[in-house]
Amino acid sequence: MLPWPKEVPECLFFFGSENDEIIAALGLYRLDPDSCEIKMMTSPEHRRRGLFSAMIDELYSHPEYNDTNFFFCVRPDDRITRLAVESLNPEKLADSFRMDLNLPAPQEFMSVPTDYEVPPLFMTVSREEPSQLFYQFALNGPVIVPDAAFCRADLTPQGTGACFFNFEVRPKLRGKHLGETALRMVLRDLASRHVDHLWLHVEEDAEAAVNLYKKTGFRVTETLSMYLF
Image 1 (tube, rainbow, N blue to C red):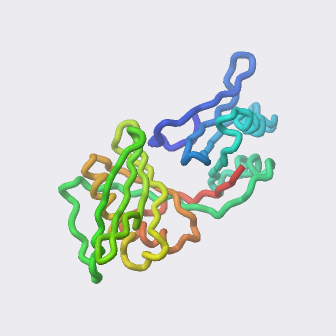
Image 2: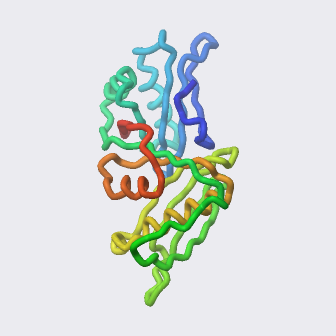
Image 3: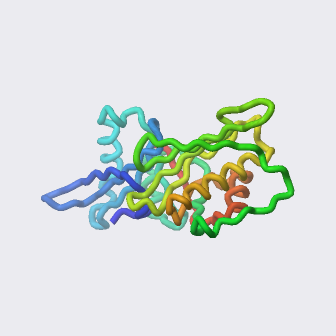
């Protein structure tokens, strides 16, 4: 079984076989139009045969993927996988945290007292796919900023979990508490949709982002090394 979180929706799987026996499997999840996250598992007796490299080459041979960036996450204690990945000379990126949050029921959400004036944000939610929610925030004030912040949440097939992506506040508006206000609005909306678990990945050295997620209840559950093919 591939060690992919069971919550991730809409994965594609590719299998390698020999003598009618499946000996390798590769899971592919598209993060955005230009990049995918991949995971792979090879039967122990068929390791060190170049199957991982062959399957990556096979992916690149398909027109749909030949311009795609592939990201591969490895746990620091998984020495066998790390050596196999590094043998292909990928680009080593910054280590990242997986952070998780168990959401309370909608009626249990409470206003969080702050020592600052809450920014006047207006949130809109749209869908491009049934499982994808896109959040956009407009800053209301003397000057209306229509795209002050944005993010995306991918729902699990059951709809009770979501992976959080691409949370960003416009650089000129940072340091004004927009990020915390927007994130709490997203969490409340997801809870109203009966999502009870949320997870994300963030670079380990992104101190401001890590602190923001911790402030809103996320906890680090895993550290991963990230590679780019």
